[in-house]
Length: 403
Ligand SMILES: Cc1ncc(COP(=O)(O)O)c(C=O)c1O
Image (cartoon, rainbow, N blue to C red):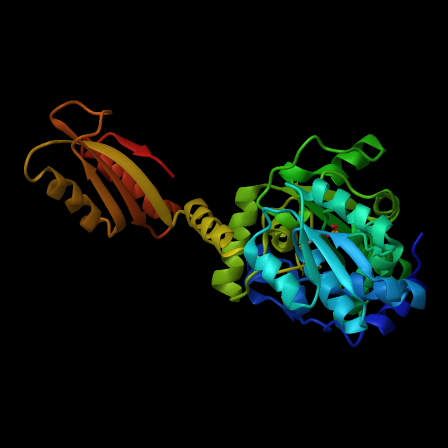
């Protein structure tokens, strides 16, 4: 098992490569929850996530011979960028195998940190197979994304920072994918302050740690389904599972809509871009998936900010829908002059602002002398949506809410 001294040693090794990220009190989330909320903003870490910490520690602990032979890993996401920059900073050659479908922005970012990118396989598992072949063929060291004590120790340096910057902390909330982050953070915290609660958070559609703890043994999910790609992992590691069992007080899950709403809150209120995996700790707090007391000092660890712009667009729309700020409806009008104008009078009366309107007389879904209308609207919240829909229905329109 990992020890606190491993994490203290890691801190010396990662000091020059990674940033000490800010920990800030949040008025917004404190007043929303009644707790005393301080955000650990690892989104401002170099490469956009905590992964540089573990990768730097792992590479620093290689022998000179291993360093000369280089490293290899497989990743479609943050670990790729973390290993790439850590290796470059240490003067070690790195090959990163990414699945062929990997978003071009991630491939470019990984290359820009100085690694050679090998595109192979259709998914992560096939990419990992190729990376292990390269490990054997070229004598490189495989840098595991989570199930490695030196990687876990590097991630644990975040736990030390949280205790130092927020000594009054009572609960720390951490995302779990493969479990490397929480293993390091929980070890750092529990060995120094066993009174501090450590809560792990997964997505509903990738809840391997929660299910493994329930069963008392490590299980592998058949598949994963979540917008939080950083934690879309089918199983936690062997070593990480031992640490989670030993140190983590509770593991909870959040849904994709809850994650989407949290990302939009962070954007709008905190002016901070956070990816799905990074947002789950705050989502768990806002949607009360664990119990906490009034005024309890809670630190959600926002672990990364690398969100693809297409994903972000979808998430923002979803977040607006969930918070009653975006509405898409369909109704049918009689095809006669003035019918649309009459409908729109209700919109004006209720200040429902139109983004887009589609008026279709040729739709096969309506009678010959009817017209189908689909309208996208900007709204002010759930009460506004309810009052507006009620007014439309009272005026005799049959309305389908599409989103
Ligand atoms: C942003 C972000 N948060 C959390 C995690 C989960 O880390 P771990 O796999 O060590 O549990 C990851 C993993 O890639 C990540 O990229």
